[in-house]
Structure formats: C-alpha cells, structure tokens
Image (cartoon, rainbow, N blue to C red; front, side, top):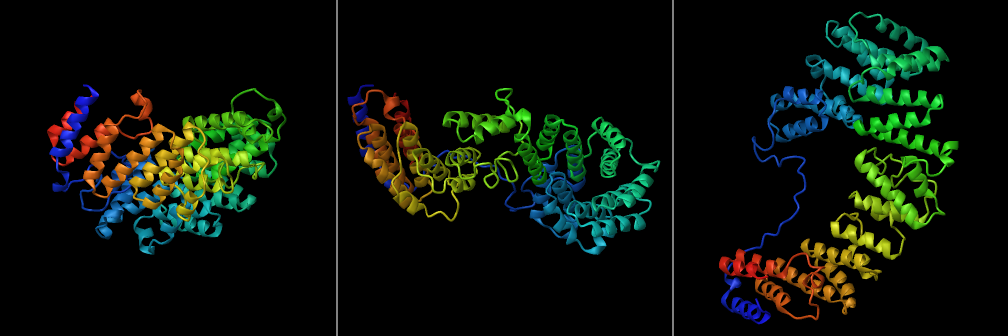
Length: 521
C-alpha cells in the first residue's frame, strides 16, 4: 500500500469514526502478578482442602503450599470450628520454612484448653521456645507433654527435647544423662539424626575427640531430619566439625546445599560468617582456581580491580544465585545491603550491589545503596527503579526528577523513556512531565521525539480524550520523519502506533475500521 493511499484511508477514518459518542476504555495487556491470597469474597474463592489434606502435602515436602492453603482458609473465616484445624497447619508450615519467629507468637497466644485437645501443639511450642533460647519454658512444656500424654505416639520426642534443651543451656552432665536415657528407649527411631547431632556436639563440648569423630561420621550417612530447627542444627553441627578438621570447602558446600532447601535468616548469617573466614584462608589467595562463590566475592570486593572485572564477578554471582539460590543478596546474606564488606563506602561496590538488587526487584535496597552517587550508571538504575515503581515510599519523586539526569548513551535513553511510559500509566502526571521535559532536550533524536508524541497520546487516552489520542496515534503512523527504517524510527515505542489506534477503534465498536488498520503493512 502506497503512503498516499495509507494517508487517504487514515484521513477517512478520522472523519468517519466519532469516538466521543462511545464511552469506552481501551484494555491494554498488563502483567498479572501472582496473588498470594484470595480476596475473601466467598466460600469458594481459592483452593478448598481440609487441614488433614494440607498436612499430607506438608509431610511430602510442600510447606509453602501448605502455608498458602492455611492462610487462605483462615482468611475466609467461618468461626472456630472452621478454622481451628488450620492454625496448627500454619504453625507447622512456618516452622518447616524456618520462620519460627512468626510461629512462636501464634503458639503462645493459644488458649490453654487447645493444648489439651491438641497436645502436638504443646510439643511444637516447646520446640519453638528451644529454638528461641527460652530454655526454662521449653523444658517445662516438654516435661508437661510427657507427664500428661505418656501414651502419646510422640512422647519420645518430648523426652529427647528435654535432653536437647539441657544441652543448649550448657548443662552437659544433665544433657548426657537425659540423652543417654533416651538412646536406650526401644521405640525411638533408628537411625536418629537429631540424637546423633546432639551426641556429637556433647562429645565436642567434653573434649572427647574420638566419640565426636564417630558420631559425626555416622551423621553424614544418616537420613536428613525434616526441614525445621533440627535440620538446621544438623547442618551447622556438621559444618563446624568439617571446619575444625580443616575441611573448609566441604563445610561451606554443606551449608550451601542446606540453604537451597531451608533458607533461614540464621543459616544465611552462618554462611556469611563462613565466607568471611574463607577470605583469610591461605587457599583463598590463589587466583583463577575455580568459579566458586568465594572467588567471585573476592573479585567483586577487590577495590583495585577494573569495573569490568568486578561487574563480571557480580554477574557470576547472580547466575549462581539463580541456579543454586543461597540468599547471597537477602537479609543475612554475604552481599545484603546492610552487611557487605570489606569496603562499605566503596562507591563502585555500592553501584554494583544496587544493580544486583534492582535486577532482583528489591528496589528499596537498590535505591538506598545509590544514595549520594551521581553518575550515568547510577541515574540509569534510578530510572529503572522508578519505572518499576519500586522506589522507597519516602522518596520525593518530584525532587528527584527536577535534578538533571545524565542521559548518556542509547541504553540510558531507553530506560528514561520506559520510566516515562510507566509513570504515565500509573497516572503520576507531574513526574512523567518532568521526565518528558528532560527527554525533550534530545530534540535531534527522532526516536525520542516520536516517543514523546506517543506518551502524549497515552496521556490523552488515560484521561478519556480518545479523539485526541486516536489522532496522535494516526499522525505517528503516517508522518514522514526522515528515517526510512521503520524499526529504527519506532525502536523506543512500546507499541506500533497503528495497533494502538486499532485498539481504540475496536473499543469504540469500529471493528471493521480496526481490522483495516491491522491489515496495513
């Protein structure tokens, strides 16, 4: 189709279609984020399973799903009878996910009669108290469980718990007595990784090297305990044993494996401590041996290295975190915003960590790392964060955009344009206008000029001025601008102007006219 015929067709459409007589909105395709919970709008919203079925899923290794189901059921409400079975599921799931700090307050708030009708809750309470260092309270609840429920199938877990509590409290002789008595119980599970862990720790505390070696060697070959407090204790105890025997890499690998299954804050902090220790080990001084986390962290932290080398190290860590996540950038992680080392004021390191957090969609952490940094790369990251709407709530967006941005290079211009579109879509009109004003300084750039026109059309559409939006979209489709390559001319547009115009026509009921536009090549 010639440009003259295209112009005549579009002119005819502008005359023939009267969109102001039709009250319609154009529905754009938008990304749908995952809904964690239903809106509670009815008894059939979301999945509906029984607590017993959810516990089966929990036992089969799906604590995240079990927690979702429990929160979903509790969100629906329905009175005590409807929700009573779900609270224990929620507590068990939180414990399995390592979120004991959230489980303990729920357990402590239960009325006393609930612990009698559901004695497993008292056992869960005691284990949570033990994990939080509340040794006296834990001992009391383990003891109460044993006395009141002597025939309960889980009585031996309470007996074992009393020994573990004494060990954690530093009462070695009492712990040895209680754990030995437990080990003599015929009905206890065999093998018992929790008992073996405790006996190995006790042997270490008493300086009995041969028994320590025997217990931890046995532990390595025993089945893992369920995810939870005891699972983490096994990992840490074995890792410490390897470290004491000079097997640093094996200890770290064990923790990395555990973090993929049980990524708790405490385990991330333990891993961070191991990496810091590794930086001082003789083998860490050797370069180029492998692509391990430690090697990449050292390359990233090395202030004298080039930006390219440090950025390459960061990219390796991001790839590694995507394939084998251990929480490097999360709270407690070695590269968390509040814990990086050894140069906390190194601007290049801050910029690189901000980049990592922005890619991981943690905009607030990224923004805070950029504080005080002024460079084209820093401004580029700020634009990406603004475009995603992930900046801290306290940020004065208008004050930021009144400052001149360093829009150097094609990639940074693209980020600025994308941020302008995003601000427009979110109806942050003044902020979009401030960014538009900065982009307008690039008036010799034809793709930028067209992007500004497209943003103007978007703004009109969102304000309900469909006539004006349609006109602008069609003008963009037919105007000559000196660039023959259509892909080059429109590389900064989020949508083909013809398609944008067709969507307005279709929403207004002009289906045939919309089809004509879409047929134009």
